[in-house]
Image 1 (cartoon, rainbow, N blue to C red):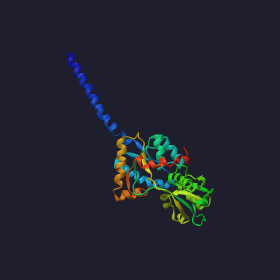
Image 2: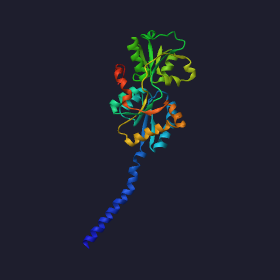
Image 3: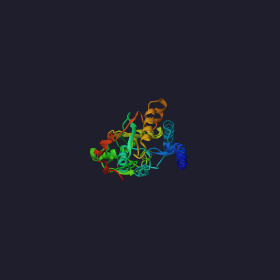
Image 4: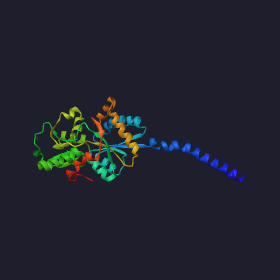
Length: 284
């Protein structure tokens, strides 16, 4: 009788434990799906435009992956840099030199990038300006979005110095749009941007400017991820972006970033940046 009692008690405990597992397991399994993953985007454009570009993409990501995503903005590039250096974004769309900094500071690794075009800087002046040669910018004020903007600032300043021995007085105005406006308003003799932000200017502004120089070309902005994000989430996001690149509607969404032909990315794609001594011009 004593043995029968203990066997019965053991069976009850086992049943209760199994019952609790049935209740708890779905909660554990869905934990990653209920968590909201943050995606930071380098503020090349004004906030309204960035949200218009990225919210439909995040909605598509949610449909494809089952995970939830929140667009987390920064008012300007320097504040965006502080955020990713602290690992504040789960995913971040950043310029290539940002990736070098982010990899060293927080371990970010690239997931995808554009394989259809490369990144390069453009130097603009007013269309009615008498500046036609790079050497005319010696000791002139040149507007840049931020010290660490790759094509617009780092590559531009590196090539002005190393190729032309030209020193400018940099004026950092926080966004690419502000660069172009400063040149249009005559507050700077020239300004550094990149081709894609120049192409996105209002036609009425664009017609007031002309490009007088372009820099070397490098692999473009990656979407990077913190290594702490679960591997299955990373893989799901990568797969979703690649799938978007295979459909007409998805391509239209990505083109607004702009990504012309989405593909995978790796740190090796950006190794050339370590040879240019760009840290001479960076702000950490």
